[in-house]
Image 1 (cartoon, rainbow, N blue to C red):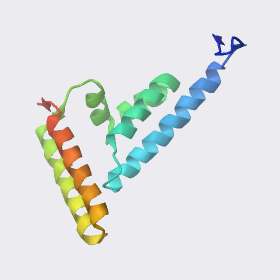
Image 2 (tube, rainbow, N blue to C red):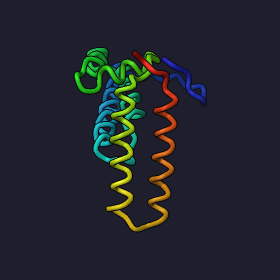
Image 3 (spheres, rainbow, N blue to C red):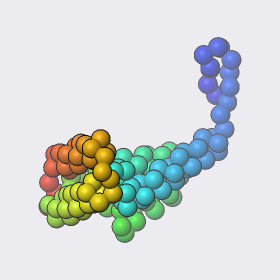
Image 4 (cartoon, rainbow, N blue to C red):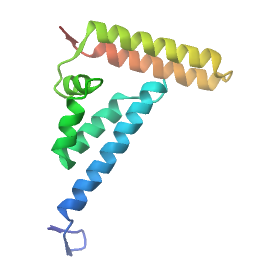
Length: 135
């Protein structure tokens, strides 16, 4: 039970709260997976949001995410601050540069869109390079 801003006592069901976190986490994971395919949509923040929501909503889903063979180790290493291997950094940056550059060249003639893509490209590159290396 909690006391609201107006002094009334209200109760939020634990089940309702858990379902809220499960739904938000699932949506975040879905958007993160779409972000793998769409170069401008970030993947990592949505996967991390999903992991955090699953921590509060369902330990079973949280464990399933962290043990996923495709993205589990990536999310787990990021959450634990373990960094990123040089090989993973190279693959990430290579895919990033090829996908954003091809999108900028082939998909748009707009200078504004190309500028936004360049800013995203530079920002994500700096972020990936700033992650501590992992052996």
